[in-house]
Amino acid sequence: MALHHSRSLSFPSASHPAVSHFDESLSRLRSSEAACSSLSTFNATINGLRNLYESIDDLLLLPHIQQIVSEECVDDYINLLDACSSVKDLISLAKQNLRELLSAIRRKDVQGINAYLASRKKLKKMIQKCLKKLRRSSVSATSENASMLKDAESVAISLLESLLSYTLGVKMQETKSSWSSVSKLMQSKKVSDDENEFNKVDSLLQVNQENELVNHIKEMDSSIQVVEEELESVFRQLIKTRVSLLNILNH
Image: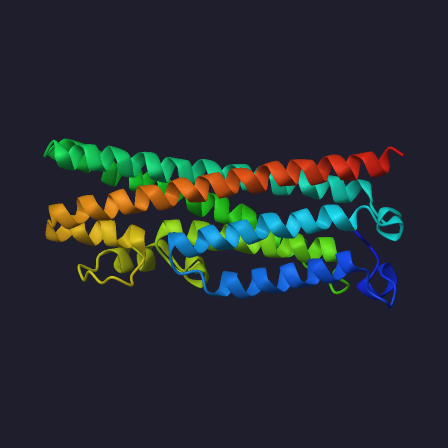
């Protein structure tokens, strides 16, 4: 989001309440993102992202902010909207795959379980492709004189990367490693309560713990449903902010 001025040039020395609100929201979001270790913690963090962009709408009411909005800023919002939509679609697909697995387990349908494993493998490839695109966006969102909108874009992309990495079954930094390393990680049969929820599905399948697996998938389904709703809420907020940016440019 191209605000080409540094923060010291873009904002007066006496911070406006909207600026302070933005800084507080950004700080909370960065702290909560670092603590994301389950679908439920991602829910709260994604909600924080929506709050961050709501605070940006307040910033855009300030005359000195309006003066530095550019066409490139709007273009960056389109890219962020596309990224959010892509991640939302992948999360929805992950939920659909799990529901199909649950149905196959209840029917004791081995072919259906194998179909899930194939779908999961395909989904991982789709996630990896999306992660590569997000990383390119992450680089472009970083600059020496980062404006507030650039800060928001950077943390938004980082959060989307973290969510996809979790869905992939690895930590964010591990997504840069080779596929063989990821495969080795997924081969572990050890089941623990604190491991990645998607990995736990694979682990429970391998050790054939049907009852625990059914309960686990049910819990995951509820959490993923909330993730979807939160992402949709962020998407709607991004559209609203983009409209505000367009209105500024057109007046």
